Length: 76
Image 1 (cartoon, rainbow, N blue to C red):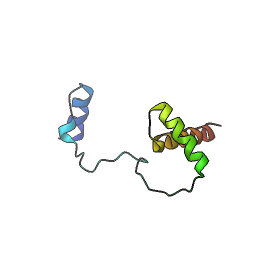
Image 2 (tube, rainbow, N blue to C red):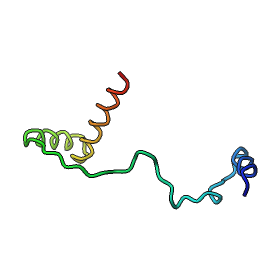
Image 3 (cartoon, rainbow, N blue to C red):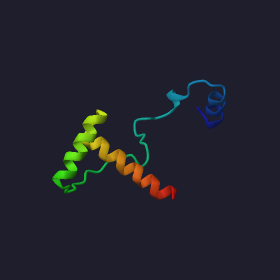
Image 4 (cartoon, one colour):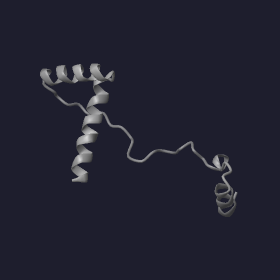
């Protein structure tokens, strides 16, 4: 399928997925890298309590809070 046909089908609301090779597709900037961080026990205890209250994992709450803080810094 050439680009003109692709554009026409897309603009008409038709599916163009069969024309795409999604095997190597990646969402940019969402790759993960493992890091080790030493955190005092009192912080871990508080993180665990808050995570339990919210019904999420410790890792989830850490990532959400870090993301929120980074977004605040970039929007300031």
